[in-house]
Length: 292
Ligand SMILES: [Zn+2]
Image (cartoon, rainbow, N blue to C red; front, side, top):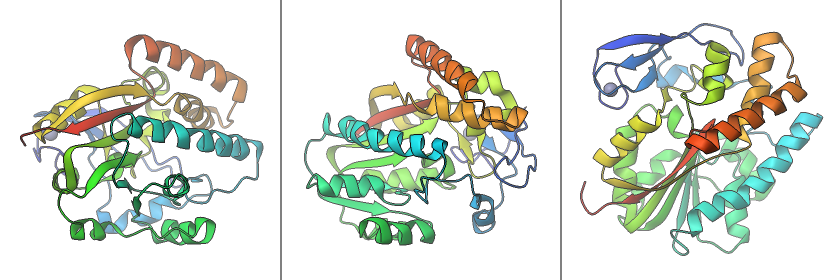
């Protein structure tokens, strides 16, 4: 794989995390020599990545609430729905909202219940099925995006989605053409330069190789989006991600989630993250600029 952002072939070694979800196979995260982007050099092709997603620990698509961990995760997820909407409505109070990579449709359902005009896209058939069963929400496969009218969407949201995308240039260019003047894209991605990324190193759960093909540094994402014709208008952290990521990372490292230690580490990551605006996961709001 060449650099997903600039297509350059030249790279240097960066880190070797592993597929903690299932196979424990080691993958190479490298740094593009041209644009400094971090990406998973030896990620399987788009057609072969499917099986790497299957895992009992991958709960974002299933919404099960069996263990205490899953119940807390469920509570946080519900709270985060309102936070997510707040990040959007500050900048675009009205118009159609498109959630790209909608998982099992929880955010689309939340917006529908607020009476918002909403459309959701999800690549995984299991996600689309679950959305129908759980919320009676119809999610579309990603190809549907091409069929939307130009300048018809007020806001796109991608919650931990862009890092999975094999052709991010094409996606962002398409979204830009579908956005109204002054429309926004809200992007949440893990931050490979956060305190917890450094602390856990190759055990850091949010490398999540090989299903994360990109690992966005703040400087790289901002520069790339600016070249795509977007202005950064807001940037903050997702506070709960530091706890979640620390728990999984501890489990990877020592075989147990170690909740108390993870909470302490999450607090540390958040407090350092706030000081430097360098959180475990970052949320960016980009506005469509007047030129591409
Ligand atoms: Zn590059």
